[in-house]
Image 1 (cartoon, rainbow, N blue to C red):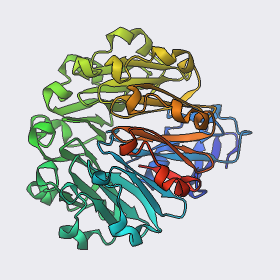
Image 2 (image 1 turned 120 degrees about the horizontal axis):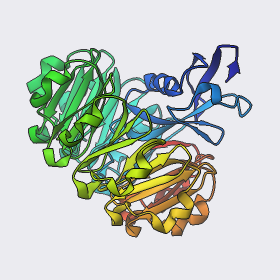
Image 3 (image 1 turned 30 degrees about the vertical axis):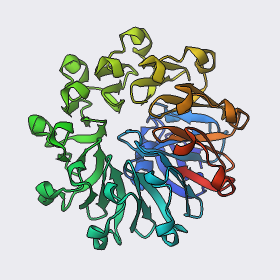
Image 4 (image 1 turned 90 degrees about the vertical axis):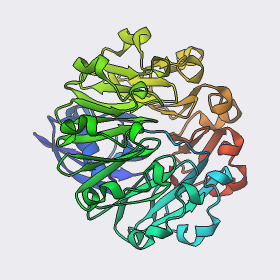
Amino acid sequence: MAMATSSEIHFELVELSGHVVAKGAWSATLRADCLYRSAHLAKPGRRCRLLQGTREITPFTPLAALDLSLGTCIQVVWLSGSTAGRRSPGSAFVAIKANGSVVTWGNDNSGSNSSAVAPLLTEGVVQVCGTNNAFAAIKANGSAVTWGCADYGSNSSAVAPLLTEGVVQVCGTNGAFAAVKANGSVVTWGLADYGGDSSAVAPLLTEGVVQVCGSSSAFTAIKANGSVVTWGVADYGGDSSAVAPLLTEGVVQVCGIHGAFAAIKANGSVVTWGDAGRGGNSSAVTALLTEGVVQVCGTNRAFAAIKANGSVVTWGDAGFGGNSSAVAQLLTEGVVQVCGTDSAFAAIKANGSVVTWGRASEGGNSSAVAPLLTEGVVQVCGVSCAFAAIKANGSVVTWGMADYGGDSSAVAPLLTEGVVQVCGNAFAFAAIKANGSVVTWGVASSGGDSSTIAALLTEGVVQVV
């Protein structure tokens, strides 16, 4: 709900299901990032889109510029994954419905078969997170339910007593989970080498943790005092000792990719660690990362940072998007979101156009659909080798490797209008429409074919993971 006074605007932030996420009054002189912060208090670690009608509200949108005649609320669309932005490496999907039940499909070895815990997934599910081959769901009562391949985190029996209540966030690496509890403690399980064993830093994880982020095989926890704790495979970000003095305070966000992490500090600077060749060494662009960074996103081996002035800075493996010199002139201003596949980036600009770079075959070359990407794009989602963009009119545009979701022609009539969210795993896409139905495409065995459970996806879906 929105009402304007001389100095304040009152908003309600509402989910697709109708649930009010947050409400309050904000100064008309602020940017919309204050609304994003309010949404994130409701679901720590979750990314979201804010929509007013069909208009995308970015963190940079001045509140005073919002058209209060468009509607009575700001709609919150929760996106897959966390603020880390790391793509799912798995081959299955989970849909959460408005009644809190769950529908699963895709590769059986990746967690599509949830029959063993089906009675626990009929109601109350509010968040789901995945590893390579397992899922973990948080329920409204704060308990966690796991299923899939036992070796990859589906077997949480060793920590079961700690997961019966109070869980507020779950994050995964390729083979392990970490759960943040309401008291600020962290519980881990799954493959020890992938972060499932946090005993080496256990005393630092008993309180004060507000968010956890994963790379492929390591975790980073942000504490309320702005310090960071890391564990897992040392070379892939589990050992942050080389930059420890820079991580004792002020960290507000962490992004994890395959083998490295990047942390944004409250002063807008960035700290990186992990595999130097995979983005852990940002020394080549240090001067550009000392202030003003508001978002960091990654491919498998490179990072891209958006600055407050709308420019983009990239580093890491050049062949994976770390070198953006070919499109540098298009990235000097106006960028509001960046998304990655395994080896390419796509940036959305404030005018709704899209800029791509990185490995051409995996989404870095969008020339085949360029006329469709000059305006109106409000979200881009990447799988391993393809992108899908949602436009303000609710249509979807895809490019990249055809078999991996870059070719959506088989479902094109279903993607011309009404799409409000697109989610991807490694090899397929799932789109949620405004009527709560789901459309899938990509590798059939990895979730691109949802025909076996199609009757369960015709209405009521509010989130796909």
